[in-house]
Each structure stands twice: as C-alpha cells, then as structure tokens.
Length: 245
Ligand code: ADP
Ligand code: MG
Image (cartoon, rainbow, N blue to C red; front, side, top):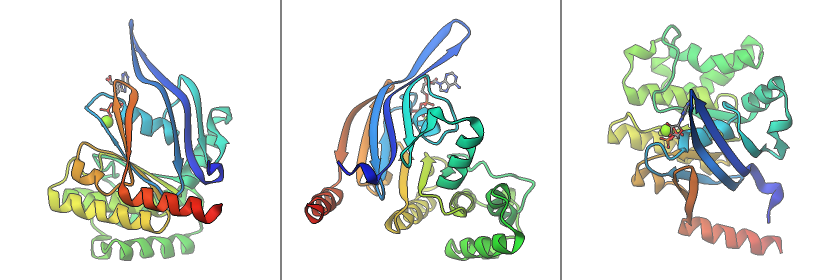
C-alpha cells in the first residue's frame, strides 16, 4: 500500500558486528516501511539496536544483509560517492551529544553542510539566516558551542541538520542529555518540522518524547517486537486511504 509514499524502507535488514572472536547480531531481520510525513519513535532498552538501525537507514553504516531503500533507491547497490550524495541531499542527523564542531561558530556549524553541497556563498547566507531566525538563535550566531547550554547546542545541531531541507530527519536520543524544558523545546521543533512534511525518526527512552510520534516501534535484541500507531495517525491513515480510493 502507498508504495509511492514510502520514503524509507528496510527489508530483512540484519547487522552483525565482528570484534575479535565475538560476533554481535545488532539487528536481526528488520523490515519496516516508513511513509512520507510520519513521525516515528523507536523505543527499547540500551543495546537493542536503535542507533545501529538509524545509522544504517541514514547510510552512516553498512548493513550485513538485507536491503535499504531511500526515496525508492536501493542503497546497497550504490557506490560510496552515490550514497554520500543521497544522504547529504535527503537526510539530516541529530545526535544525543550534539556533535557540533567546537572550532566553528554557531553560524559556521550550520553553514557547513551547504559548503559540502558546494552552494555559493550568497545562497548559503540566505539559508543560514533563515534557519537562525526560524530557530530563534540568531543572537548566538557568533558564539562557539562550548559557550552554549546543552539545549542551545541541540538547537544549533537541528539547524545544521535542516539547513539542506532534508526530507528525512534521523535523531538519535536528541533529548537524552537535556533538561526537561530544553527537551520539550527540541521535541516541539521536531514536531513543527514534521507538520510541514518532513519525515522524522527518533530513537528515545522517553515516553513523553514518544507521545509526539504517530507510531512507536518497539525493539528488543535487534528485532522489532511490536508497533503502535497513535490515534491521530490512524485517523489520518484511514482518511488518506478513503480519499485515494
Ligand atoms: P542502542 O542504540 O539501542 O542502545 P546500539 O545500536 O548502540 O543499541 O547497539 C546494539 C548492539 O550492537 C549492542 O550490543 C552494541 O554493543 C553493539 N554495537 C553497536 N555498535 C557497535 C560497534 N561499532 N562494534 C561492536 N558492537 C557494536
Ligand atoms: Mg543508541
């Protein structure tokens, strides 16, 4: 159903990490279809494979077997250069530890993905200014990450993730290192992005964060154990189905 709406798809995805003699099966036969505009929360205890799944879906890591499709393109058939281009033009990452570059200012951190995309300086300026205003962080643009609170750093990291207008945002425990008020702010920003059509996947331990989602995917030991659809999504899903038939 809705195959043209599927932005992200994993088919029988498995990942084994081999360190010395030990093999760890981090993902075991994961199959999921993620539709455009969904807001998904991946939940499960530490070590169940949430980060591994996000990293593989976002082409930051290779799979061991199975298939991943981004915007309908089968990624494991692409070479590294093609993968990088597909990732940079479609996916924005947000991490628990922000991963900002300490030597760069707020402005420069947000600008960086546009430099990688080889955008001319005037275009970069317009885009970065838009993001600074949208996230209400323009007054911090000349500061460095270490001068900022965790909540502010995560806003900058979100700015960096969305400055390329990605269709998909992958956020790995984005509120994990934040106080509850900053965490709420981050979740509201992700929610607003989602309401304008961006597909959002977060890994989280927080049920409060998961309440922003339309669908919760529960994982344990590298497998999906269950999925729950939120009421609102279910209503939307039925409505969409009716309007298409
Ligand atoms: P989660 O994000 O849910 O806490 P992870 O995806 O980080 O889980 O880890 C899943 C499993 O894979 C764990 O057993 C973890 O120790 C293992 N793992 C993750 N990354 C690596 C790696 N680079 N090398 C070896 N084992 C790894
Ligand atoms: Mg993790």
